[in-house]
Structure formats: C-alpha cells, structure tokens
Image (cartoon, rainbow, N blue to C red; front, side, top):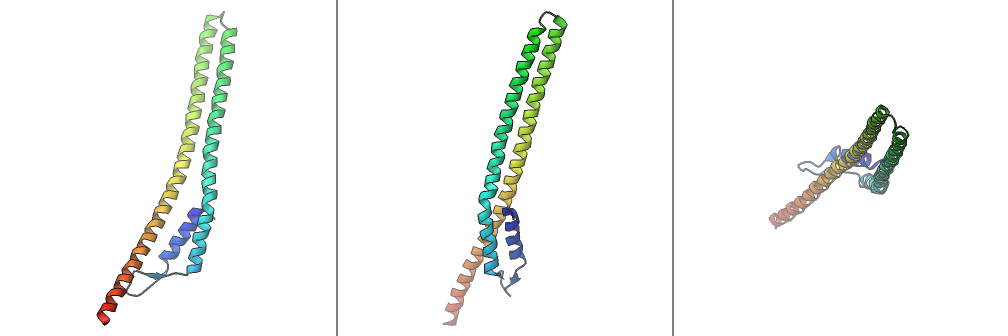
Length: 159
C-alpha cells in the first residue's frame, strides 16, 4: 500500500470510530491504528525514492534532448555546408534547421512541464495528506489536554 492509502485508511478509522458519549473523543483499536501508521512510516522512503527517481529521470530526459538537439544542429550544419552553392537550397536548409531546433526545444519544454506537473501533483497530494494527519493529531492532543483539565476540575469539585 502507498503512504497516501495508509494515511487515508487511518483517517477513515478515526472518522468511523465509536464516539465517547458527551465528548468529542472516540474509541480506536490502538493496535490497528499503530499498525497502519507504522506501515505508512515504512512506506515513506519508497515513495520518496520514487520521487527522487522521477527527478533523476527528468535530468536524463533533458540531457537526452540536449544531445539530440546537438546532433540535429550538427546534421543541419553539414547539410548547409554541402548546399552552400545553391542560394535557394541554403535558405531552405536554414529554415528547416531552425524548425528542427524549435521543435526540439518545444519537445524539451513539453517534457519538462509534464515532469514538473507530475512531481508537483504527487508532492501536493502528499502535502494534503500530511496536513490532514497533522490536524487529526493536533485535535487529538487538544482533546487529551481538554480531558486532563476537566479531570482536574472535577477532582477539585469533589473535595
């Protein structure tokens, strides 16, 4: 299971937990929740490794595009040199070379945009899940702190 699925499962477990009467608290099976959170914690390195691989692939794709562009430029230069004697052919070759360069640059930009969008979406999803988890943890801690204060006050009233 991926981290996001595990965190969603933990969130669902908290949402569906049986409530304590007259309280915002709920009853959860500690072992199940700890197991899910442990699995999520263990999955983080693999998801981060996947993100790192995507970034490395991005660099490889860009380098491949640069090499291909350099190769295309070199080929275009050779063609232009062989056709220098004919004015129309030289003009045509320059236009084609520029078109090839523009196409290669556009493909590189498109690939970069696609990679950036994918990485950003994965990181945004992870951010949302982590923020939700932090909110749940903060509410739980606040509830625990509220219960301790209520217990202290009720102890003072009994005396």
